[in-house]
Length: 259
Length: 259
Image (cartoon, rainbow over all chains, first blue to last red; front, side):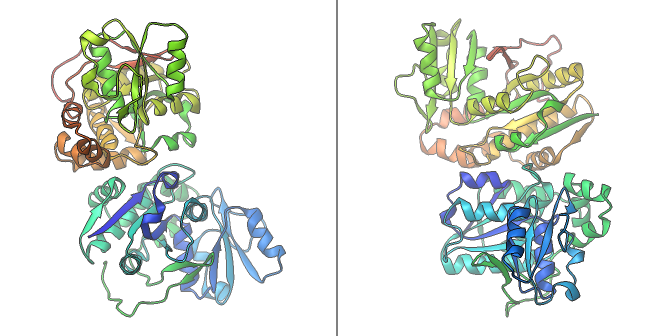
């Protein structure tokens, strides 16, 4: 029986016994983790999640041939090469490149996972998950937790410190896929997310109906919301390796289908 | 249309624009807010929510004829008159007395509401809600929000910084009662809580199935869980008045029924 829980907000990490979790997924559907999957899918060498634009500039100042990406207030950071729209991370732009990414919620959530406990140690697997790689992420989490003998934690990035419904909905979709692999024992947060998912409409409606989704639509990011809503269409699982997210690769056992 | 949201954890308060909410309810079903309702129902003059045992001792040192109540690790604070079991707050013990209460989650949540913004100002109503007074709390919140022209916020106290399913379930029950008064516009947190409630079993099972409920049952507090699970059986609404929770009184329009 796999124990799985969902942190509905990164603030919960400070209270949770992180060491018990063998595999952790950070979820920021709109849009950071979707962007990470898009970048690696299109051949980026890696994505470095950093907390602030200043940290990103420091990477450039260090002389590396990096692309700087990210947003503040959903808009590209002035002077950066790329914003936080996954649609910008096209193959011709990102193939072979290392991307340093800073976003308000998603990349900060990674830094909180890394700062909160055992995370980042060799024994703990940390990945980026979104709706587009939900099935592949679940498969990867299941295998890693099995190998490490630990539990699974899904961390919802939220929006500016608020709970975000679309991240909890994504957690529910991953829970559904995990359940295809075997029975789950769920913590309170996982049960809440699962119930939210069980009553969900289709992914597009869930995203468009969330506070953050409405904000992005108001800013004109209709195509982004559409792109982020596609369920389990990618096999790419970004996994942290020495602070850099790299593609875990397409597992041999990948099959088609929602889970 | 009344806008209503649910903070699934007190940590969310730091990000939320508290000033927009005309009426705020703190929810800690197991057991602080249930204990507050029990104390006032049994004639206590008031309940002062304080964050730490040291603050409670300071009240006694000041010479007031107060009763000290509260827990750490679900057990009575050594030297205190009362623990955090609502069953201890009997009429013969508490009638006419002022109680200074400190609990790990519930009273701290009050202090966070008070510390986070406009809360505590004359214009914002802050109450204690639990399953036992869900209907009465909803009625009070609706009227206060209508009078103040503001929105309603339900704050789940959680457990030791973790999300607690039983508090979100209680929020869902209050949302259901609010809906009897008129249409609601729900934030992401409110939508998540409502979905959790819509798929709930009966209150006893929800409490017994939660992480905190299981912990209390393991410690032998079966009667407490039973008592806390009774839905809308009390008309008492504890409201903050200059830092002291006092009974708002039985509203004239109180009717029987779950909502």
